[in-house]
Amino acid sequence: MNEPAIDLTTISAVVFDTDGVVTDTARGHAAAWKHVFDAFLRGRSAAAFDIRADYLQHVDGRPRLDGVRTFLASRGIDLPEGGPDDEPGAPTVHGLGLAKDRVFMAQVDKYGVAAFPATVALLYELRRRGARVAGVSASLHARRLVTSAGVAHLFDLLVDGNDAALMRLPGKPDPALFLEAVRRLALPAARAAVVEAALPGIEAGRKGGFGLVIAVDKDGAAAELREHGADLVVTDLGELAVRGRVLPLTS
Image 1 (spheres, rainbow, N blue to C red):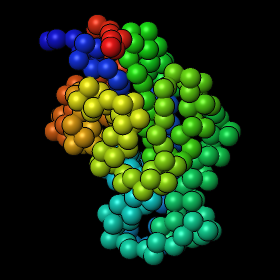
Image 2: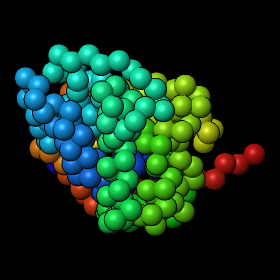
Image 3: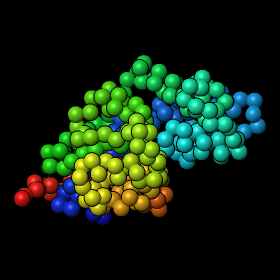
Image 4: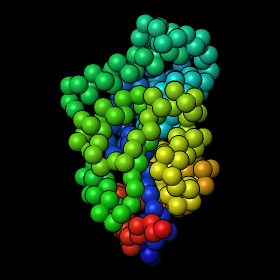
């Protein structure tokens, strides 16, 4: 079987989803969602939040408010939208989203954020070989998280939830965030790779026409990741080789 690799003679840039691919935050996100949803569901005739299945199917890779809507829909619950001034934990979409944000950021303040060593090594290798590197995240706190993890300097740019709100970009599986990253890099999507761990992100990479879609399989879902559009599936980015180098543009 051929070694999975990024060929920099055909790919000039790599766009990373930061949550769960660069920063080790997925478990913290899932725990925060469970805390909030279980408190909301207590006393209601609906199943509690499954920290693995519900997180992967309904929340992972989506903007925070979309995650609230999608999970509640799975339980047949429809809440008013509310607004950004709602009290965290209020029975509205915004209220639950704000509660999740508060719980998650309290964890970050207490424990900090770590970057995956294999991802850091890959970022250094890509830059050494002349590739451009971008980060994408639906999180409003993405810049703070990558800075806390000590890897902000390894990215040429970051497109995050603040950009999405300002530009009114739809969330994954729409490819808008990824496409905005390559637009800022002044490259066509076909010359860029996407590295993702969430199914909506894999689908977004395929819909966006990216030249290579790489999935990091953290949950034994390789077949499903391929069905959603992954060209390569690895369990750790340390398995991924980098070949060639990006040649500088000549006039």
